[in-house]
Amino acid sequence: MSADFSRRHFAKLAGLAALGAATGVGAAESETPASAGRGAPFPKDFLWGTATSSYQIEGAVNEDGRGKSIWDVFSHTPGKIEDGSTGDRANEHYHRYREDVALIKALGVRAYRFSIAWPRVFPDGTGQPNPKGLDFYNRLVDELLASGIEPYATLYHWDLPQALQDRVGGWQSSDTSKAFADYAAYVAARLTDRVKNVFTVNEVGRFVNFGYGWGIDAPGLKLPAVQLNQARHHVALAHGLAVQAIRASGRAGTRVGAAENIAACVPAIATAENIRAAEIATRELNAGFLGVVLEGRYTDGFLAYAGADAPKFTAEELKIIGAPTDFVGLNIYAPQFYVTASDRAPGFHVLPFPTSFPHMNSEWLRVGPEVIYWAPRLAAKIWNIETIYISENGTSSEDRIAADGQVYDLDRIMFLRNYLTQMQRAVAEGVPIRGYFLWSLMDNFEWIFGYGKRFGLYRVDFETQARVAKLSAAFYRDVVARNAIGV
Ligand code: NOJ
Image (cartoon, rainbow, N blue to C red; front, top):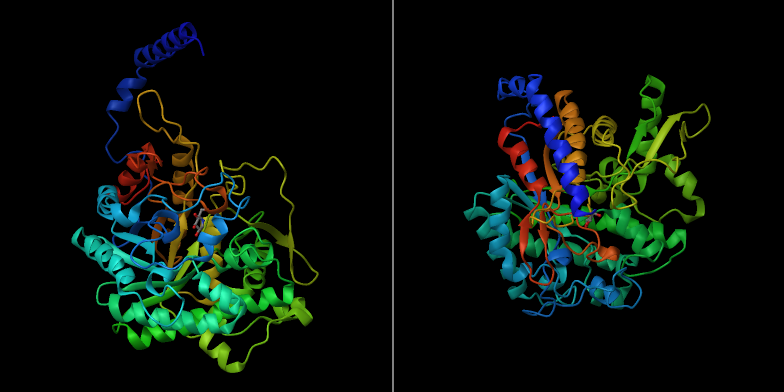
């Protein structure tokens, strides 16, 4: 754009504004009450938060006795990460956590969801704990509490100790499930005096399929269906054993649940038949993890579909897996399946996506705000859930720095405004969503995309480590402060 064009463009805009004032538009605006343009409020105790995970932000991968994780090894394998980067340094959060807690506080949120790196606490996966590793989380939790922010800890956000992958094949073995329970017990005994809410595993639907099925996430394996289903079963078992371990070793009253990227089904047109179809689809397409955790059994449809590839399990294991939890975390981004009713089994029909369906700056992130209404509503009905947290929601954006040094991430604000409006609709109708964790606090290592996809409310310069609030941070701060969405 030439300077001349910009000047003319500006003159035109200025002219339009003058016209608006002359016709009284400006005057009308100044008379609008402060509450105008506000959506209906959320319940008074609605929990606003933000989220991150250990490998994506901590860095300091060789400090204080931390062991290697499968993501260290994977990101250092040439060709695996789009921009050739690793999490070696990431956001240096391990050293800058105080500054980062201040950023959380500046948003005005009441809660922060972070994850604990298992290989910091048990460098070898099992055996000797590394107290220095846990100390970091002690410091972080104390800092959060001193800042009036409630810590929500996730025990597993994909950084499995490499030692377990090497020794027993990671999630291919139920030894890993047992090791996870020991790690959960150790952490619970030391943190639950201050951490009242614990997520067990994050996004089983992604890390099992991507890591053990398609080979595109760590540890990069392409296992046949029978082994993949078994690995997922071991993760479900790990969740169940961890729930037991936390109840046994943690403070009474510690609340626990999983955080899952539910396969999100939306009725293409909300007729009674299609809503019923979306309900059937939600149950069947989540049977491999959420379903077995919330029902204590695999559905007949899941077992019939898997046939000879079905996981091997015992009744005792199902009992452990299905032990009651205190909440369900749902990570909600894109609508995954638009469905209509079908007379034929399994009772729903999945529609193909048109290539013109809009998406955000991450191609997988299709824009369908209604997903954050339907997925919790259907899940709550199917599994009779009393407490749901949206454990993640957010988007990447180009996030270019403007000439004035600011980041005007209007697409992120558009995305959030629309998703939050749909979430408000769900809450108003009685869907039991009690809190929302925006992903993410700050730009970070976005797994296979490296640092190329920015999800943060704060922009991070990965050279200087400077953090700058984007416009969306102001948007979110306003939502939180008013407990309502500007529409
Ligand atoms: C879900 C994952 O839990 C998180 O680690 C990731 O960065 C976001 N989705 C965005 O892709």
